[in-house]
Length: 325
View 1: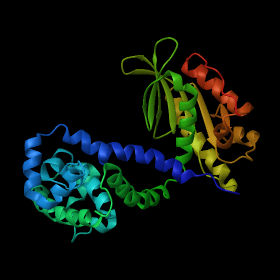
View 2 (view 1 turned 60 degrees about the vertical axis):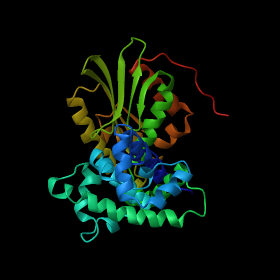
View 3 (view 1 turned 135 degrees about the horizontal axis):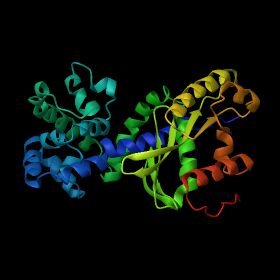
View 4 (view 1 turned 90 degrees about the vertical axis):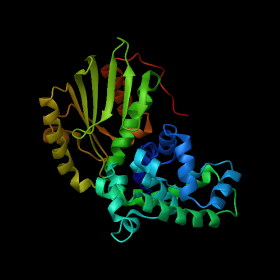
């Protein structure tokens, strides 16, 4: 049987966050706040003239391919963009003898004082590498899309390595997106791990990832004051023999949720053969149990019950039910 594409689900969310943090979207947002004359002066100082001319021939500015101090000082995380673009893995790039002292730029978004004096030298060395990269790809039109593709080629293995450690989060993403689909027409703001909904009473309902439990639904009573409505614990593991442990973990999470005032506590599992009577005994704090496969199918009695409760608990006006073709 073909297994569920858990890693790719996790990748989609991680990629959306990484684009905002350190890919071309982040670079664009950073550059638009900087003085263009300073950028041009630094590009002329750090980048070989013929490389700038080559990029200009494709209608592209130099900072899309070459790091300069003003950009890295304004947004240190963008060092990760240039690292990915040049094809360096984190392990390879942040060796002590390569760029180990600069790891904090990408990971924490800070330039520590002892490192700040060396940023210019880092830019000089990376711009030399960037010039070699540009010369090597000139057999095809250089574009924003090509540079984006090059960063993703490096990012893929990095995401896979991280996702293998947290495979269960793919189930959380799936359940979150099922909820997003149900409340879709009422969504007022949407981010990869958080969305807000305007309900029929005109109040804001917040639906977001949380540390424990995994997904929470809260209604804003007044500014920064919320009524805790639903806590959802998602157990994404597929090993049937471990289902008792997962239900026990869900129970611990829901006990905390109850103590925090959540009205409803739901457990979603990734095991179709779950014994609901057993699950209810082992997690008495769970009001309801659902299977990921049923929610992903978006059809059937189990999904319809989940959908009806989401509509009810968020207080939105029910829309038309979707029919599977």
